[in-house]
Length: 463
Ligand SMILES: Cc1cc2nc3c(=O)[nH]c(=O)nc-3n(C[C@H](O)[C@H](O)[C@H](O)COP(=O)(O)OP(=O)(O)OC[C@H]3O[C@@H](n4cnc5c(N)ncnc54)[C@H](O)[C@@H]3O)c2cc1C
Image (tube, rainbow, N blue to C red):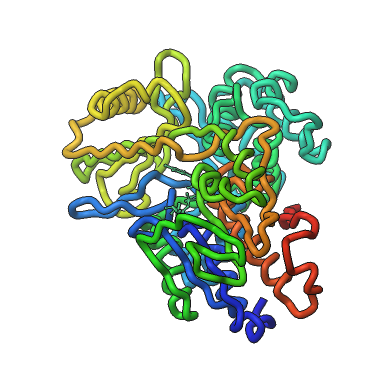
């Protein structure tokens, strides 16, 4: 993009929304030399992946997990000077559900070249029988042979039953992976999108399946550095600026720009896009979206308290169990004694008030570890009611380019290949910026760069 720097210096671009999608678009446009103005309604950047100030410490609005497969996120972190090696702890994929001394299920992918890491990890897993392990291998092999295309989309539950996956594998492996990746229960989740995430993680070499767990608060992982980068390149970041209208021109609340990227969550995009005829159809599509919550319960224990691993599973669903994952922030971020319990998707936990929720999670963890736990010294529950869109089969996703001349979309919901994740957000922002740079280039015909009449942009495909 740098070759377009001279061109871009004359071009003004507005980005509406300072989440990871908007920041990605803004950084890429600034790298191409565009004059960027970023509008953010909140008083901080980061959107649904932001830091939260508590007396004496910084936490996040939710514990986030990245994967080795988050190629664009890692690239952009480096581009703005945020070092992934320092800010993310890389661990081989390890799913462990403790039950006293013997885990109910324990899978760890060893550091072997692909596909041996997967084969060796599955065969050595504790918990499933040999027959069950072969069922998992067969499932992955069948998906690979089919090019990770499942034909007509269906739910993850249907896909698992079609591939005769045993109940214990569903309970400890596939369903937790589905919930973690899509934030949607397997009975409702899109099998094709789930398979896409398997393709790019388990199916894409050892490093792609690694877990990357933040060692610092989320602001430092990307938004703060992205903001420094933008300011250094002359960008104008306007916090506490809630945009009311996108107009012709394009314009943002009446201010003219050459390009606008609308990078807000789907429900906010629907409100911004509904008033104009050119974008009404997109708004109507987005109005059909449903959402799933995520809660993170932070508990501060005496600093001596440590988990055996940075991330542990609490058996998912059934038997009235509500806990899903618990993270040791002491092992990850150096805040000894701080645990983060994560609850994804709609569930029984929503009916509990914060105190009852923490008491239940604490009890479940004590049972899993086969020990008693001291009472937490403090607790803080953050409930994000619209954490992600519900990723169901055949969900319609808008293209990045809209019919309003110069107006583009970015956001986790625009990346059609992926569920709502940081990587989807970043990819969508990068894709919108690239298309804008191309349409602004002197080589692009004036007709093509006007009015958004050309064909829908394509996302870069992996593989
Ligand atoms: C608790 C939680 C846990 C999660 N865990 C993970 C995880 O482990 N791994 C993972 O990959 N993903 C995870 N996600 C999903 C991930 O955080 C999101 O997919 C991603 O952050 C979405 O980014 P975005 O830029 O598309 O949207 P957003 O983050 O929603 O950004 C949109 C921004 O636009 C602003 N805005 C809205 N309206 C206006 C307006 N009119 N004018 C100006 N600004 C406006 C908002 O304030 C916001 O800052 C999690 C999400 C949550 C909530």
